[in-house]
Image 1 (cartoon, helix red, strand yellow):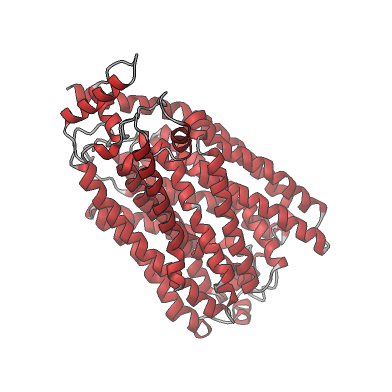
Image 2 (cartoon, one colour):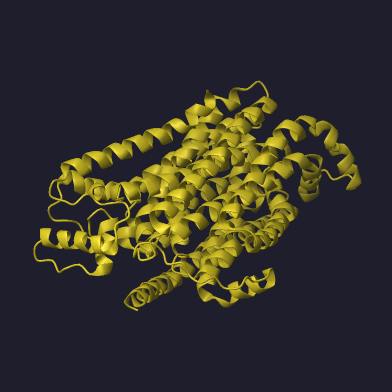
Amino acid sequence: MRQHILILPLLYTVQLLLQVEFVLSSTESGNLSINNIPKRPSIGKKRIVANMKSNALSRKPKASAVDGKETAIRGGYSEGENESDGPLTKLRKTLFPIYGKMEVQKFLLIGSIKFFIILALTLTRDTKDTLVVTECGAEAIAFLKIYGVLPAATAFIALYSKMASMLGKEALFYTTCIPFFVFFLVFDKSIYPHRGSLQPSLESVQQFFGGATNGGMLILAKIISNWTSALFYIFSEIYSSVSVGLLFWQFANDVVNVNQAKRFYPLFAQMSGLAPVVAGQYVVRYTSKAPDFETSLHRLTNAVSFAGVMICMFYKLARDFVERTERSDDDDGMTATKKKEKPRMSMVESAKFLASSKYLRLIATLVLGYGLSINFTEIMWKSLVKKKYPNALEYQAFMGNFSSAVGLGTCIVIFFGVHVIRILGWRIGAIATPCIMALVALPFFACIFMGLDTPATLRLAVVFGTVQSLLSKTSKYALFDPTTQMAYIPLDEESKVKGKAAIDVLGSRVGKSGGSFIQQGLVFIFGDIISAAPVVAVMFYSVLFLWFTGANQLSGLFHAQTEMDKADKLEKKRN
């Protein structure tokens, strides 16, 4: 019964959007509806549709073959607004710029994949933080990202590159996705219940380290004595990069072209913003009410397993839909042309290829910038949250509410800012996140500098830190992710597959691990991360400046690459 609750918001959204599409198609008497166009029209029929549109709108030139194909696919609408559109139609185009049943179905199927990916990601992220922070301390995150996550990410990239050269895209998706959910299930059923017999005691580890009682050595002792929780943290961190960076965006970039991406990608973030709300409230209202954390983990794993099944199911449905409606039409101007695949490269060759491409280096700068900057503030904030909520179930409930706030905030930001990329351009969308993070971090650091001696000041620091982390994450999901992923679209197939894998998994891990390495050194020097706040603040704003500069440079290259890609497609059609 609990599992059925998770899918209700998604089914309600699907029903609502299909009803809106039906009403608009029925009431717009002056416009051509996609419902009246056959699903697989020939080139000649598309030209007829374009001519009908041209005759209906006075003083407009006759559509070309390419324009006709775009018009047919977009439900008879050109890129600009139709002067005969009524207020309801214009409002709909503003809030939901997806045209025709075919595009709505495509958007919902692909968006559902991201919804359940984010649902599982949110549940596992909150669980890993609860396990590690309450058992080992927030500073343990910095150690785990260096000695655990980074080596695991490197090994995964090597394995993924090998699998990519041997398997097809569908088999690669399932082979990458399913093992993570198998591990989460095994951890819940076998590893965590027997952790007492699997883990050494803290006292024995401290004796092994020569009586470590404070600083970095104590953190390492706690990690080793709670290695099962550390293992869960590592798997969850790798899943967070693989699921969104490779499983979802690689599929989306393969089936969504640039024109659709400008309209689809911001709305993908809005649709997936529902997932943290559902996941967070599931944690707050159900799992955190368990009598102990082991029972809470059972409830969480049930929801994660359900999400894994839904991911695979919607991927299958979306892939079949795209192949049925678009892939067979080789002359379709709106479907990305399949490029000839170049020979596969080894990991060393892939790293050299990334280093030799300025375009990919700039994308890596953006990803590294976010990884470093969010890591600098997040560990400090979680350390304060643990001081306020030392109990595991209380900490879990707080993080559940925070996840819901992140999802709701993402939806609100996208509701008002969905057209930032479409209207103001890629550059504004790309620089918005570092600018927001720079502004909201000021009161957080100021509060820490003033001292945390009383419960009131601790509560105030937690509030400012929560707001800072909330706005940083919502701007990432709403603006940073769409603009970063759009930057891959004009690239050739080799750059997308190899470059994206290196940047999204290894690159993001290097960014976060680099920040963790710095903070680990600060813990050894200052004793804890809060005492090192002034140094962290200086490095935080330095990274944001470099991120902002890289986004400005990439903006010019992105627009140039997009125009070259369009010119190549037009040249191929003429030939």
